[in-house]
Amino acid sequence: MLHYLKDHWKKFLNVGLFIVALFIFFYLLKLSFLYAAPIYFALAFYAIYRPFINWLNKKGLSYKLATGISITVISLIIVGLFASLGTLLFFQAQNVAHNLPKWVTGIESFIHSYINSLKSQINQVPDSVTESAKEQLNSVGGKVGEWTYSIITALFTNVSLITKVLTQIIIGYVLSIFLAFEWPRLQRFLSKSVPNDIKKFTTSVFGDTVKGIGSFIKAQLVLVTYTFIIVCVALLILRVENALLLGFISGIFDVLPLLGVSTLFVPWIIYLFIIGKTTLAIELTVLWVIVMAFRQVMEPRLTGNSLGISPFLMLAGMVVSVAVLGFIGIILAPVILVVIKSLWEKGYFHLWLLKEGTSNKIQSN
Image (cartoon, rainbow, N blue to C red; front, side, top):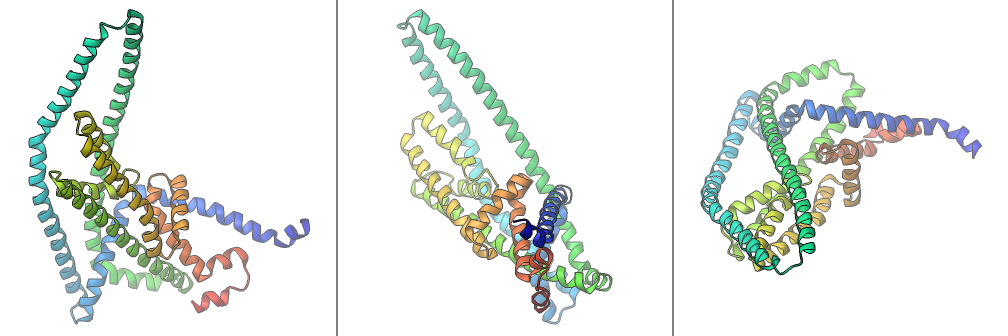
């Protein structure tokens, strides 16, 4: 054992240093995402523009003209889609607002009838049992108050978080326009300033990363689309009002990590049980379970296949990323996995950790 350690101590040292460097990288990545999120959004927007810019540029248009046309057309398409969908959702939201007082009245009437039934029965109960029940109810009431306060606080926190994210997306969109027009100049500057070895390394890894992240975004869009279709069609079959609005909200919640469609379905199902619509509540429970099961089964498969990573490694990577980085780890996990996969396939891990006979492999790549 000692002989083996003497012969391979450098390899173990390299592995240890690599693990330390990996944790430092994770920490810096988390900080960069917290304080420089608009830059990441700008890169994502530019990744959408880039294929159209290159296509128009190959057709003979100048780069600036191709960039201007691409940004304008894509922006108009996005605005048009959101405007059309927003109009439909607005009318359905009006319907929800119109029916909301009726739903609240239904809950109040249920509570009043339940209290009255308790009052009629409480006179028949011994005093000792009554006092004990009052103490228990006071305790439960306090707990419910604490839970309600926590839920309201969490909702306001999420609203502020969503507002912050939307602001960062808008800033990222503006930055992406400047980036799109300045990209050739930036590319020339980097080409002259960066050494060839670093340039070759970053170009190779960055290209694989951009390609992988693009595939990951497509996979997420597929999952959200499936969720929207499943929920919308199921609600139409169940003859639930505002099916389009509820399907759209389900799709939005499906994007949010750790929340998902449960944010919509759980309160809704509880409300239906309270007002006595047990059949619909059970049907929605079945729908909720189907959507959650579909997401759990298909997400690792779709995202893993799109990134060229097995579902097990994809899920394990997400778990580790969340444990190390927290909430942001869910978003950054695909990026980290794609970078690690690219480094492994190019042979850089073997070069850095083992230092044995991989230079030829890397040069060939």
